[in-house]
Length: 527
Image 1 (tube, rainbow, N blue to C red):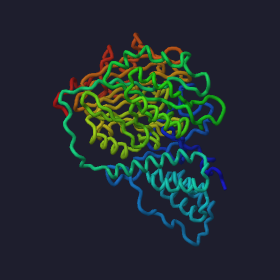
Image 2 (image 1 turned 180 degrees about the vertical axis):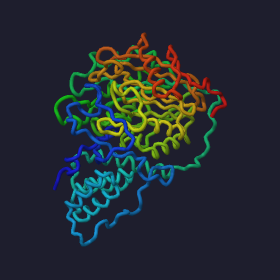
Image 3 (image 1 turned 90 degrees about the vertical axis):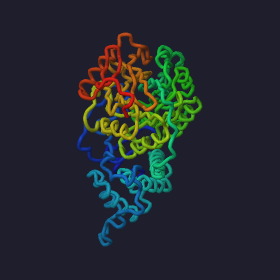
Image 4 (image 1 turned 90 degrees about the horizontal axis):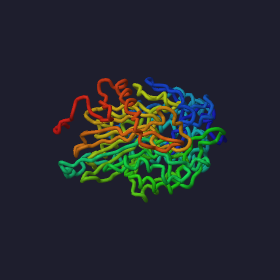
């Protein structure tokens, strides 16, 4: 019996990194994609630079191609398999041939045919682990997560130590639970009391924060992080709410699967004792939805969440998670997304918008954070359609951001490319497509635009309307210590990118970093 499926051995499969990491099936690309080359050496991409080009993973097809959900919730699993007996009784197909048919169907992006073949394989050879494993992935392509969970549970019974099983189970459990949660959501929830009419909230947000890693050795700051953020305290503390993307876990345990080969390896693990520096800096809210939060496995991820809880920092990342806090009489929700089904899934528009709508029902304001897009100095502009990076589907960000605003988001904050990107207004709501690197100590490439960051300062009123905004420029010194940038290099860069990518709907970026709508001030009565 194979310890790994033939498909995993022969094909370059997608490591759906993030809140947990698990392999997925290899399929044809979506029709509308933008290809990006790997980030500059040392840019902390999701794949190790030592990985051969032929092994670049290929992403699963966009969930938008999957059947539409019956309700606002994500698609629910059918009660019965639609292919209960896919092959004639007398055909005499062996388990090997059935498995091969399933592989070819996945290559052809035909998930129903793959389900038929792998299902027949599991009936012909119930102990055939690879057929159960791949059948789970075929179900996942169609967002049939309860069925995927059933197959991977069968794998667990046959071989509890099967490679990548723990992460696949975590992914399936999270998405199955989310589907159930959304299906049971009461669309007629009790009306909320009106928020204070004149209430406003000032938000300051930054991109990637990774204060140092103890793996590999030698990548922690000389003073053990005590002064890493001290120069930017005034920028972070002067707000009602300060948001960061926590680019990697806060934990003291776990093992990484990212470093199976020699050479450079981008796996981060910041010691839990560094958490107090986030509190000292004034951090109030964190996203854990990114391609590094699962670098050291499920136990480390859970320790990260427990550490943030102990620090009083609400977080969002895993499937179904919504962070909540209150400021100035306003109940504020934040939903963080990433291009991994182990997190709130950016690439599943139906589920993403259903989750934002649910957050809208129970909060006065809703913020959306997303980790998506290609990486590096060649990824400054935002293409139309999907971005493919290292073979991974990094999202159709224009589609996603507009969809979540349609669903009720008031402010959308992006990160992931390790460079800043453009800003856009959509339905009078601000979208910041990438805030760049903010505090990324150790192994990150900080040359050129990758060394520039910003604090995005935004004020919203009680209805979530944009009232004012500005860019507070930063840069990183040495190996990754953030400082205010008096030269303000990032401001003209964001202005240029905005004019290039959104000539009609882009924000107006002033020479002083001010952010405004091309329509002028938004009227108080606007909805």
